[in-house]
Image (tube, rainbow, N blue to C red):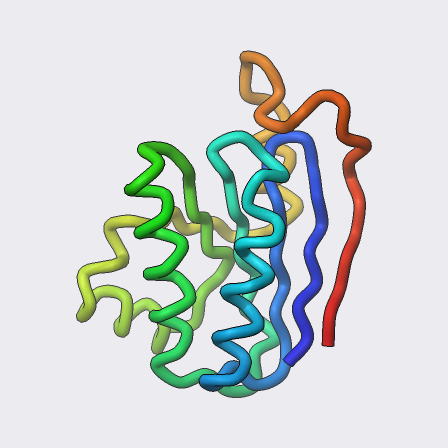
Length: 134
């Protein structure tokens, strides 16, 4: 599994590709924890379109992020073009109501950048930056 993260002022985009199984879940969860403070909230944008395979581990990854956001009292999870299967699983597990759905990463980032108010990221940071892991 490959995980690419891109840091913007108002969000962190996480693109996953390959196979997300138990081992991938551990790596993906660790990556989310590593980028957690990149944006205030945080605002995490997940692009999972290039996942060739995923099992119930995807629910574990999203549920972990949702639980942490609930404990902290803030944050947003945005899914970009999730598959129909993932949508039905999220609906069945009652997690769909905890995520936002969007059509493209680019439009989502642009929409977030146009929101009024102070940046959601640390102004001392130098976004956007990229990081990837295999």
